Length: 241
Image 1 (cartoon, helix red, strand yellow):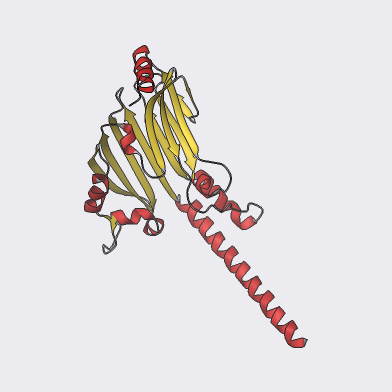
Image 2 (cartoon, one colour; image 1 turned 90 degrees about the horizontal axis):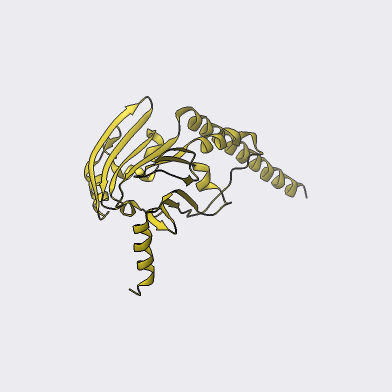
């Protein structure tokens, strides 16, 4: 009986140590994330009437976070600093049909390493990736620019009831992805954070990708479709091929 109580005490002690250690790790991560700006991505697309255009994609983050992220494949791990592997980057964009990587800028802002890509595309849909789909299509009486964001993988909510998670939750809410679009005509309806005539801007926090709740996200900006565009769209739907 005494031996069982000792074992139980050992188990409880181990659980308490593990809980304190996890709390410490969360506090450290929250401090690092909130203090250094975490990681952010900004994509700005300039779309022409026919769907072609150009884009500017900007990635920024602290070195340690980049080294542990999928974006590390674009950097040379043998280099003393975060030196961009331009060959790997060019090879990556070679898989995008109708997309040309035109220019790459790399610089440092404080603790942040910043990479800015300039691309040209034959059609905005060519910029689509596994988790982000772009389109510029007629939908009824509208010509709509749309970004469909697909949530994949295991999701885990951050328990806000734990004081140690407050800063972490705050950081994941304030950091994330900015999407901007400049369209060839006036925007008449959208779910964007801000709209200025033909320009729209959306923000998707990192917490969206971690949350168990909610489905995929669709960002959109509607413009008025011309009569000709509606006729062509009707013909496309009518034809059996």
